[in-house]
Image (tube, rainbow, N blue to C red; front, side, top):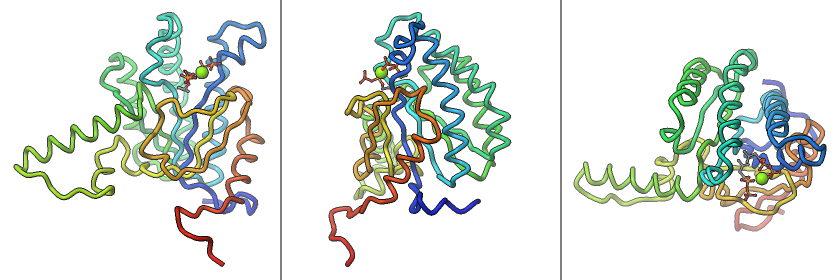
Length: 242
Ligand code: IPE
Ligand code: IPE
Ligand code: MG
């Protein structure tokens, strides 16, 4: 793994991104919204490759929220088609860059063909050593905590007793236990909200908001966020080391 560039040191181990602003990007250019989603998919490739190159270990991308089903059917259908196309088209790039693919969310509610492509991409990239890219699909943060509580209760019932539970024990029931801590959360598109993303995982994340729409978030913008992160003092409730 190449050493992180000094201006990006320390590098966040786990970066999460709320990729917002595709529709407004398109509208600002007089284009239909779907063009913004297509452009956004190109940004996903660029940012994923750069994160892997720099040595980020985990990149979690919010691609479709549990609330996005409220959108017009036409837009949802397009997003699902794009997702399938993206996954199929991305498999060689993931292999070339040693990136492992994973997905979080209520995946069983996705259509069989999308689910099939997710499973295929996961299986193909399973042994890749460099970075894990996690797509959040039909994902909601509260839903994840409820699903974890349900799985926890199911285990307790099977064992016939409710065990002592620590935060670490509970985190094992999250969709992606290895991603239970996010170091840096980025939101593009100008809004300052979390929109039900990774609620458990961002409890001590550093936050980075930018007005740039997701299709305009390129490598220079990623570098800006990483160099700002590198300058921050993370205290986790303690006192600075002097
Ligand atoms: C983010 O862009 C992509 C998804 C939520 C799928 P939007 O589609 O939310 O774009 P804006 O926020 O309307 O500009
Ligand atoms: C958040 O963006 C979800 C994704 C980026 C997938 P939204 O556009 O759905 O969020 P709100 O509606 O602005 O909160
Ligand atoms: Mg949006």
